[in-house]
Amino acid sequence: MAAYGSYSRSNYGAGGDQDAGGGFMGATQGASSQADKSKYADDTLRPVTIKQILDASEDYPGADLKIDGQGITQLTLVGQVRAVQPQATNVTYKIDDGTGFIDVKKWVDAERAAAAADSDSEHFAPDTYVRVFGRLTTFSGRRHIGAHFIRAIDDFNEVNYHLLEATYVHLVTTRGAPGGDGAASGGGGGAQHDGGGDSMFVDGGDGAGGGASRARLVNCSKPAQTMYRFLATTGGGEGVHINDVAAGTRLSTNQVAAAADELLGQGLVYTTIDDETWAVLDY
Image 1 (cartoon, rainbow, N blue to C red):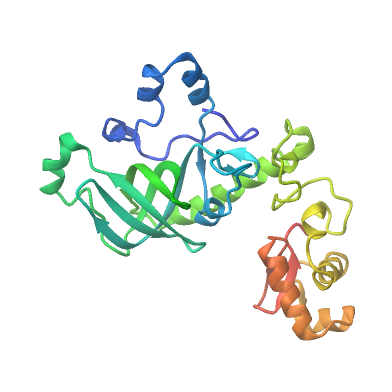
Image 2: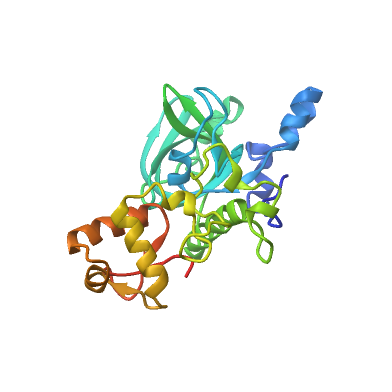
């Protein structure tokens, strides 16, 4: 299984259920041709958020989807079941992880259909937190997850852990491993993908903010750029209040509020002591 920079993680507790559809690589590799073996050897199991899935890019219609410029094969996500739609051949769950919604389809094994009908283990009630393992699939222009395995989450810390892990993998992919020279020395990491400035964080820009994505920033509006540079040069650990930003940049408070939302959407700033106090993310 490929690793992200120096980061590698493959054990998420799916373990003994591989024979029930959670054997993500082994069974398929054994029966595939040499070309298929090469393809599956490059498989990854990446922790992601639903927003990353919905924002995944493709070089052309029908091409493999990419996150941070890298092909996405197998993935794992954590979320809350919002709706359940059982059918004869599959169960479709609408999953929400706080960043978006996506349908997850768990196909019913024909040989186990009778056992599944007598057991609630194949169904998760609404509001249940679950971890999903599967592959990203597109059908009729809509993306969904074809699940190999789904299990309930018993400890809510796993939800927070997953979000942190997905963030870490994103940063390693786009900026390089910790302690390194950033994505530029990380074997052509996510900063060099075809999307140019589409990475959320890119090392090596010479703009304000000490390594924040210059390519990402230049796509922002002028007020957003002005606010970002003001925060990067005058902000501290507690950030700068929106009124102080307006006074220091000669922007109206409405312009600053809109700029803050824009920068937040790009992952360049965050709120600190309250919802109107902002700081750059890589201060």
